[in-house]
Image 1 (cartoon, rainbow, N blue to C red):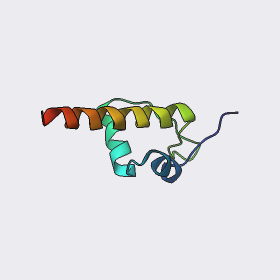
Image 2: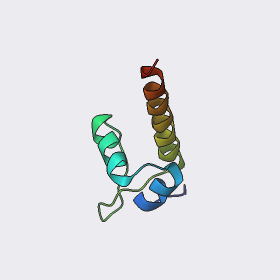
Image 3: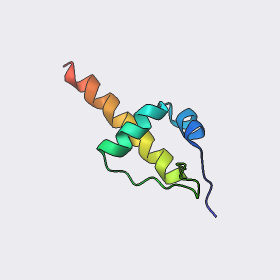
Image 4: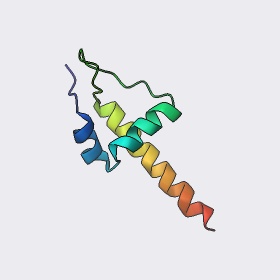
Length: 66
């Protein structure tokens, strides 16, 4: 069974605030799994996805100042 992370754990691992993670989920139509109580949980794949999104956004903002 793969490791599952809570919103708080995922936020700490990625450096992305929980409300930003939820926003990206909606805007990018990400399919984040939920447990039997309806709470989000994140996998290593999801964590890497958020890290990639964060990095791309940083690069975009850095390039826009040129």
